[in-house]
Length: 307
Image (cartoon, rainbow, N blue to C red; front, side):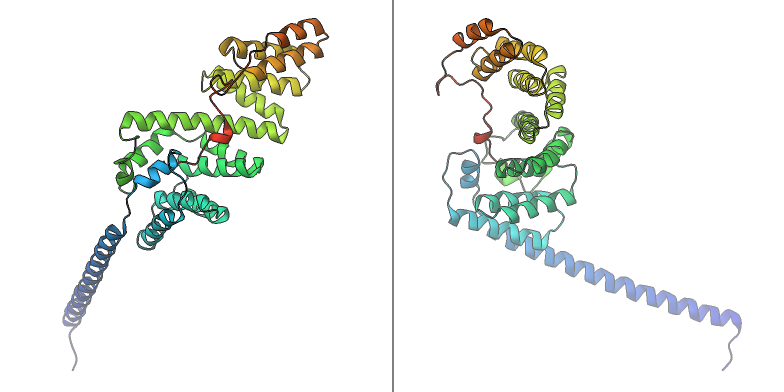
């Protein structure tokens, strides 16, 4: 049978319409099944969700390590990333858990996954920098801490505030308001900066250490006594005792208990040939105790953070 061109066109159009209608129906059914499956998976996850009271207490240093508790959190977050694979917070939580379970390499890989998913999120950089610092890999620490201090705190704050994954933790945490969350983030940005300077010192890169410390001083950022001390130490190590003296004295002006600054000042004075003045400084060095420390920042006491 022969059809006129107009009729052939109508037949083609009808078949095309039917084909696309069928395709739409198949896609709609498939999408609905995917949504239903996701809802079922999320319901299953909700049933798996553990209490976060212990995790919050552990992060704060108020509870000892318990493997059985960490097993619950790992089980929950491992299942979560099977169903929802695009949330950097989930991988950050796994990194935190695996690190404290003694599986450092696994922790690092999860923090790196978090960074790949969101290169602008502060906490995985901070935690990785701290891990490498504690492991004695100061070049690795510089890599991540240098990036951490360059990240905008506003974005990371908003991510934490809007994350459904973090809400049940925030509900039992002391960081349960915007003000407290911003305050905590400011503290840990300062810690990142301090650890960055210490890493440069450990690497023997005193010029970079001085530049970082001096930038913090000029920006009126962070612990000013700490920054002045390490600016002085870097200059002393670089053979600039005259400039070192300026920074050590300013450190002591800001914190009379900074014993290391007295020691540094005495060394710088000896390097300048002023031994008598160095003795006077040594005699003026205060006595420290646990109740009277030289500095509130002690890298040995700094811990990984959930957020």
